[in-house]
Image (cartoon, rainbow, N blue to C red; front, side, top):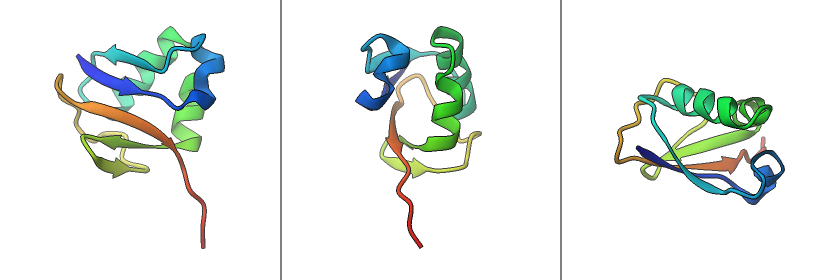
Length: 81
Protein backbone atom coordinates (compact mmCIF):
# COMPACT_ATOMS: atom_id res chain seq x y z
CA UNK A 1 0.00 0.00 0.00
CA UNK A 2 1.11 3.55 -0.69
CA UNK A 3 2.45 5.58 2.24
CA UNK A 4 0.68 8.91 2.77
CA UNK A 5 2.06 11.81 4.79
CA UNK A 6 -0.34 14.60 5.77
CA UNK A 7 0.54 18.04 7.14
CA UNK A 8 -0.27 18.64 10.80
CA UNK A 9 -2.82 21.26 9.71
CA UNK A 10 -5.13 18.37 8.72
CA UNK A 11 -4.84 16.61 12.08
CA UNK A 12 -8.26 17.98 13.06
CA UNK A 13 -9.78 15.57 10.52
CA UNK A 14 -7.66 12.56 11.42
CA UNK A 15 -7.48 12.75 15.19
CA UNK A 16 -3.78 13.49 15.01
CA UNK A 17 -2.78 10.83 12.47
CA UNK A 18 -0.29 12.27 9.97
CA UNK A 19 1.11 9.08 8.39
CA UNK A 20 -0.88 6.15 7.08
CA UNK A 21 -1.17 3.64 4.24
CA UNK A 22 -3.76 3.68 1.47
CA UNK A 23 -4.50 1.33 -1.41
CA UNK A 24 -5.15 3.24 -4.66
CA UNK A 25 -3.93 3.45 -8.25
CA UNK A 26 -3.95 7.25 -8.64
CA UNK A 27 -4.05 10.45 -6.58
CA UNK A 28 -7.84 10.70 -6.88
CA UNK A 29 -8.16 7.20 -5.44
CA UNK A 30 -5.96 8.17 -2.49
CA UNK A 31 -8.12 11.23 -1.80
CA UNK A 32 -11.32 9.15 -2.02
CA UNK A 33 -9.88 6.55 0.37
CA UNK A 34 -8.89 9.28 2.84
CA UNK A 35 -12.34 10.91 2.56
CA UNK A 36 -13.94 7.53 3.33
CA UNK A 37 -11.85 7.28 6.52
CA UNK A 38 -11.95 10.94 7.53
CA UNK A 39 -15.10 12.80 6.45
CA UNK A 40 -14.38 16.29 5.14
CA UNK A 41 -10.69 15.84 4.40
CA UNK A 42 -11.20 15.21 0.68
CA UNK A 43 -12.22 18.76 -0.12
CA UNK A 44 -9.26 20.17 1.81
CA UNK A 45 -6.88 17.89 -0.09
CA UNK A 46 -8.32 18.72 -3.52
CA UNK A 47 -8.67 22.47 -3.07
CA UNK A 48 -5.87 23.46 -0.73
CA UNK A 49 -3.06 20.98 -1.25
CA UNK A 50 -0.49 19.95 -3.80
CA UNK A 51 0.84 16.42 -3.57
CA UNK A 52 4.30 15.02 -4.14
CA UNK A 53 4.30 11.46 -5.43
CA UNK A 54 7.73 9.93 -5.04
CA UNK A 55 9.24 13.43 -5.02
CA UNK A 56 7.40 14.81 -8.09
CA UNK A 57 4.89 17.57 -7.24
CA UNK A 58 1.39 17.46 -8.75
CA UNK A 59 -1.04 20.36 -8.28
CA UNK A 60 -4.00 19.43 -10.47
CA UNK A 61 -3.22 15.99 -11.88
CA UNK A 62 -5.61 13.79 -9.90
CA UNK A 63 -5.05 10.86 -12.23
CA UNK A 64 -1.29 10.66 -11.81
CA UNK A 65 -0.43 7.03 -11.07
CA UNK A 66 0.33 5.73 -7.60
CA UNK A 67 1.99 2.37 -7.00
CA UNK A 68 1.91 0.27 -3.84
CA UNK A 69 5.51 1.41 -3.20
CA UNK A 70 4.75 5.13 -3.65
CA UNK A 71 5.09 7.80 -1.01
CA UNK A 72 2.65 10.71 -1.20
CA UNK A 73 3.23 13.90 0.75
CA UNK A 74 0.41 16.43 0.78
CA UNK A 75 1.65 20.04 0.97
CA UNK A 76 -0.19 23.37 1.28
CA UNK A 77 -0.34 25.13 -2.09
CA UNK A 78 1.82 28.21 -2.42
CA UNK A 79 0.13 31.21 -4.00
CA UNK A 80 1.92 33.69 -6.12
CA UNK A 81 1.73 35.74 -9.16
